[in-house]
Length: 413
Figure (cartoon, rainbow, N blue to C red):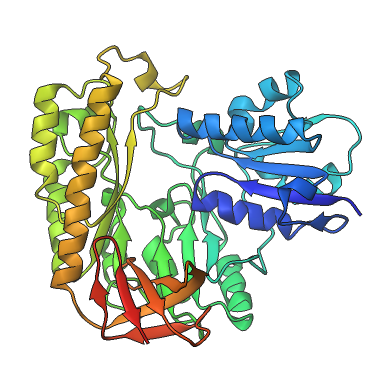
């Protein structure tokens, strides 16, 4: 039996998509060792030039070893045809054809099967390989058209997964011992807009399922936090951490980016949530065209007002086909790197200050054992390292006594 290896790049949505494909494999052996694989499926990311480079480098290495390479994911639409023409890959697999993967891997001739950008997965994931928590994709695509973003062009418009299918999947996974669930998608805050419901209502139903101990959410937009969402914020199963995508803190740059959020409302939202005890993360882009020195100074001044303890930050990356790619007021790369470092340093200090100010009992889900410590994350999405003679893997541990380190917390039990 031939062996197939799955390599995943990018976001949590790709993690879910890879698991969905693995669950469809019937006639091949899935291996964890890429070097013994006959076939390698690369679930690619194309959100930045760096992501594209990482994918290409991996493909070059795999093809040199003689493996048959199949590309899926967002990069399939941007790079698939070119990579195949260059003889680097054997097949190209689009999002809507993931359910066909077992039969496509049997093909003896090269193929491109991109499918469409309008369908939604009909199959569910019943097991996550090597994961202590379960990832659930609740929607696909995005209706926003931010000027810098390529993702709507490779994922399509927003469409929601059937609510009953989501609930069925969670019930099945809780019976197999999963108790922490991460809801993901291209733009999860838009869940239900095409089905006359909302993310908040879905969360209320998930929270009633026996066995659900913690719900984590992927990135949501500030303008999508409605009253039905706020109603569930104090539930015991809701992680005390929210990741809300600001992208910038200068009003003019937000408009250039064609963002829907505005500074004044964003700050009020963050301060309100912080008062309710939430650790808050965000996505942020520096160096976007039009980010002049004056606008950056204003953005930095405003950024310092936000209680942000976690960040996913980027230097702007030009994506062909997007409106931003045509803009002329470019920012020098070194200047953008310096700006990135500025906000990252602010958030690092904010995170330390948050942990010092919120020194309370922590509920940690232990995910791994590395370098002599059990490791996991608490309800505020901060890392905990645990020294213990017991095997704590996959367990939930309540910790009252711990030391606050520069980048993480540490305890002995």
